Length: 166
Ligand code: SF4
Ligand code: SF4
Image (cartoon, rainbow, N blue to C red; front, side):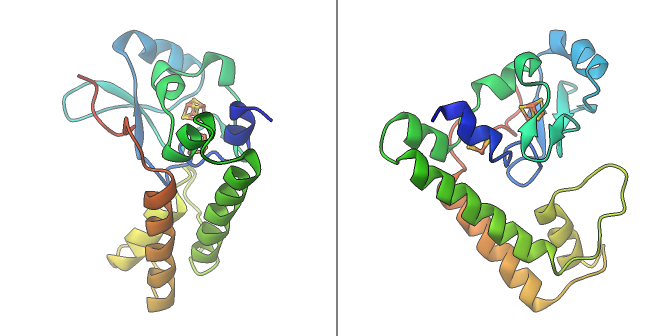
């Protein structure tokens, strides 16, 4: 069981539920566009890939060998725990499945995503809570909070992908 195998079964740092963007090095922007990634400008003008990433199919990156440097460098808390031997592969897989189950519980209560640019489950749930999309209910909002807390506990780590490049 390899570390990359965990990521291929997860995809949470690519689907917009953990981060909104992946920062790019300026020299990577053209190649990213050629590869079909949606390249946007951050507030400081630096390029970034918008998530949910267009290269994500199911839970796997279809550009794995050519993924940007920011993707290569990133490792979530769970990945680091597996790499450091403090959790087993089976335990890590179980955490990934629990995270997806919590997100599915949120999604079941939301209106279908009809936007041609896919939007993450948590972002859609936040829009609903803010009254900017249909589907809000207190049950769904509670499910969103449970999912966010779980992701914070098990996945958010350092470095954070949404930090602007320095
Ligand atoms: S969130 Fe962690 S385990 Fe999941 S794909 Fe990203 S680095 Fe891998
Ligand atoms: S290029 Fe691949 S690794 Fe990078 S965000 Fe997109 S799907 Fe994830």
